[in-house]
Length: 425
Length: 106
Image (cartoon, rainbow over all chains, first blue to last red):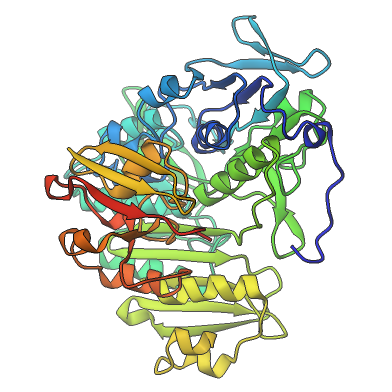
């Protein structure tokens, strides 16, 4: 990009065209699986080893809280690629394989079994762990989290007509699970510490919209509510105990209170970490030959000039693309505006950008009709972020506005009789 | 089953045997066809699986939904035969279909 600082060249840069080295990817999720495939697509001929600690080949996590919970997706549709893909492309996929440490001095990865594997380039795609509640009973049977297919299996078993699900944490995972629970006839209560759901990740207009939409579909909310512990019967959870003394009965409790980057491997290898493995725009860590991508990274957030951690599929794909291009000596792909999506009931939420420098909000459309968008503008009327509900044109245009940094006219943006195409003109 | 032929912008051709019920996007991604990014995994949320369907097959792929229409409105280099490949379900009737890929999805 014009005006962007060129990162200093590393050994990998100089070796750019040499595509014969040994690549090890630790973590076989969306980021790791995609990086392996893209390296082959871009012409890498050296050995590629993809290590995953789960027993299944790379799969898509977003459906776990949606289609998968509702029984609308099977293992095959969840898979990122068929299992045969890895053999056909000479990618050594080793599942149920944990890594205990990295030896950067000797360029080796040590597995849990003690086996050591040599590498020339090491990509960490180790993801994040669900944050646990530091309260008694948090490891009780029936107190669940949702990161993996195995987690989703346990949660699915708790669903069904007449069953009661308590969700702790009103974030995306929690709300999506509550929507899926209602779709299957289960009762759902969402317990949130803040005065509104999605408090950390969406604006107030959106929070209130989602609360109302969920309430209309039978979800109960307990806001400003602290959780003290769990009630149990026969060794399994039977209720969530709130700070005000009430116990909300449930058959399962899903804890969705954020995630913590897996950074211990990187930290121990000497990589700078700060609530995530610190990387540059192309995935380089502070240690030569070591790269990191996906949920585990703290990365530059274009075009905001700040760093942060993103937990999203587009982020995993973008970074996989960046690191594969870097290793294969291809020009760096242009940076992408962060974006996210969520499906709940018949709602499609699409968010582009982050409201880092926003000073005002413009609502376009009608929340009552469940078709609207909230634009976040900075002091120069440049769009910083857009949150769109069933409003794909607003999302797509907003994403372009964010990238172009061109000011928009707020009065046009507000006026539904002016199409997004015309606003963009 | 249906054979789908993907032609990259560069002219490189990929023939893929795809199971009915999958989408054209899934057939491309699962077979590592370059040029279909599919950032959202098929949620019709990103417009990065844009393809041009050969005219002879266009009608058989069905009509664009309102959602797809809006997404395509803001994609690059849209033509009358543009589709989002995550919205085309593979069926026997599409056996032999050719789709062409744009220069870039972003």
